[in-house]
Length: 273
Ligand SMILES: Nc1ncnc2c1ncn2[C@@H]1O[C@H](COP(=O)(O)OP(=O)(O)O)[C@@H](O)[C@H]1O
Ligand SMILES: [Mg+2]
Image (cartoon, rainbow, N blue to C red):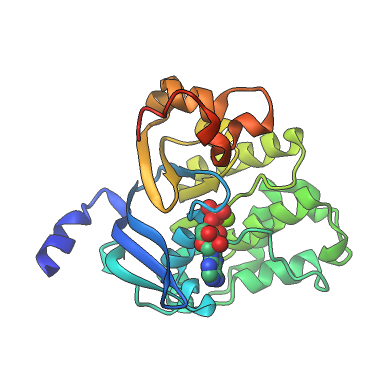
């Protein structure tokens, strides 16, 4: 058993999720055998409709599941070859994996700089100021905001949340729906910066999104999740060319059409089911 798990965490995968099941409150099963590989230095995106289990997957990785009475009841998660699915959230951060939670979660009655310093709480070196400058180089507009973070716009709060993650000097960042609530222009800007950080800092990313258009453009590889299962995965090119992905995720048109909850009304079944 241990050997099988070992074999799955291949050296090029920095994060390896192997067939996990997650149950909330001891009875509600949300993930049903999810496996995801995130190779070193890449951006992998996890796409899927609301309620599919994307945030649950991220919480299983970061150890935050337990704060919601959730548990990984089967399978395992390895980060850099080390098993982390039974680990406390602080230890996961110390190991180099930082999660930017849905809804940004910055501290509203602290300044930008105070929020950034919070991100560095696991560090003991004296290079905090240097890293604050590095964050400001990616997000220049944050430097101009000297008031409390609660007064920042939604886009700026998202930038601050990402900047705070950078302050931990992580090897990997998991981002939960960074595009949520942002205008298309800001989404483009934020995704551009995510891409730049990945390339320049070599930080591996797992990007959870409902917004497949932007996420797939930034990503190297993608997984599509529905009702707690991975239903399709492939390279960016494969997914962008896939007819079902085009129809159900990338197709312009109205929101209703993009929602998988309404798919029962479709004549044609999805090819992956
Ligand atoms: N703390 C919780 N307790 C019980 N059920 C939960 C909890 N969090 C999420 N769920 C349920 O798990 C399912 C997946 O939720 P979630 O992981 O948030 O999906 P997504 O992020 O893809 O929208 C949903 O049906 C949701 O109601
Ligand atoms: Mg979610």
